[in-house]
Image (spheres, rainbow, N blue to C red):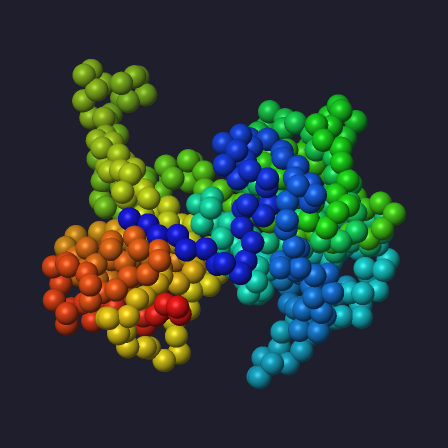
Length: 407
């Protein structure tokens, strides 16, 4: 059982592509997709402005690795743009030196702001909406490039990206993936890309020059970007897809942690499989870990532990009036699953944490999460008495899951 409530004040997948359903079916993880701003109604200022990004970096004194400077394909040494400062009784050495960073930018360096979903509330809500639409973790970087600059060399990424143009213009060339870059996995696939003149004609050669122009690139597609006559600013929204390799590794770890697969490999196994396959391990434990309910619960935890908490506990826990309608608050995916302790209880996943509840609360949860327009506990004809309903509803309100409907 899951519940998805998007942040209404933040963009989502339908702001990035013209037809989200067709995009997921035909392009996601498969092929590049260009969505011109003229075909959509995305207001990029709902995401970020160039002035705001610079102000946050320089005036709020961003720390590395929250930023880096890149020029001609190489990341500049931190010592060239960071300084030390005393904080309490400690010294930190990764604080931006604002005027030095501006000097390097004017000399051709691109400012890269990293992990913005963790520091910018508006972008945190945006990544939450995307993750609700795609069921994969999302991260956001910003690239602020001077005119006629080249930041990174020709390369491919180990994750999918949306490029959203904020200001200026940037030329992008994209090539078909090579054999070793198709669906690459970090730490397993080689990272080298041959020179441009060995790749042949690009699959795409276009310039993003309108605010809101959006280019989607699956992982493994070699690409190169460079500014032209003007400076450029864009967001790179990374889709950090969970792969089946990751899922199978998790199943193996779960089986080992549960004490399975402990038998010794039979003697003389190198001569071939023993007659009748005697001594072969029982791999059913892997199947248990891949059972759909358990797999979905693990996937939900894996995705949402990597995203910011955009559904917060209230400072003062409220008391719910059971006779008034309540609604589920926007934020990370909500999912209910049996407790891992096999104690007959259930857990409600909230994204960054889980709420432990008695199994008797499941029908109430199902009714609440299935009522997007509002739920009145006093009108619910379920197995819990009024006192138990009050306890559950107050607990949900204290965790920020529900609030009284405002209308």
